[in-house]
Length: 125
Image 1: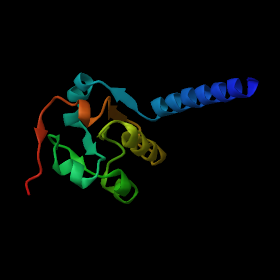
Image 2: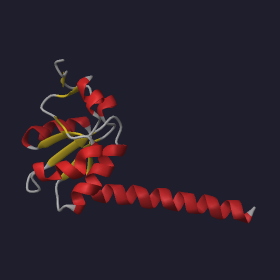
Image 3: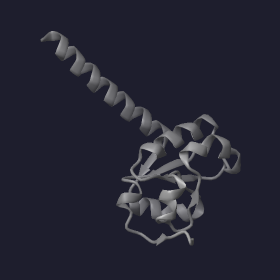
């Protein structure tokens, strides 16, 4: 019984640690907060190209998480970065990578693209 309690406490501690670590990597913004600032920032969609083609936030540039490391030099560390993915998982991973490369102002859309209700563009085929 004590073994299970220890496992549960460790899992809770890990979850809390991960949550605080993610919060230190980037600022999580509501859609309203995101809309206020993303036009003056680098708006990056970190989803894969197929996801991007099916709809993206107007003005976004597609830099998939799988290509972020190779594309990081195409971004400016002195300018705010607004990230989004389908949920927030890939955005937090991208934010972690950006912070390691001295990007200071990194923001993430809370709930990701699936919660977005603003303007959407579609890639012309």
